[in-house]
Image (cartoon, rainbow, N blue to C red; front, side):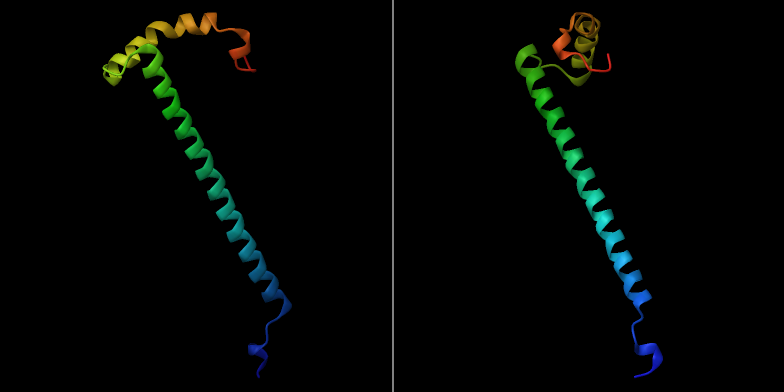
Length: 88
């Protein structure tokens, strides 16, 4: 066995560092994907509720936006405190 065949402690540590960095990237990617799916699910549920309570299933996207614009100021001004964002 020559000198080059032996693993040095430094190469083992560098390998472990690379493994941990890859694991960190995977965890960040997993968390981002999980948050993205959660957000998409909330948007789908919100759209379903809007269709249910406002009866807008027959309207185009442009018509829905126009309708929402009409009521957005009223809702923002009359929103009960318990539904307000904590930053408001």
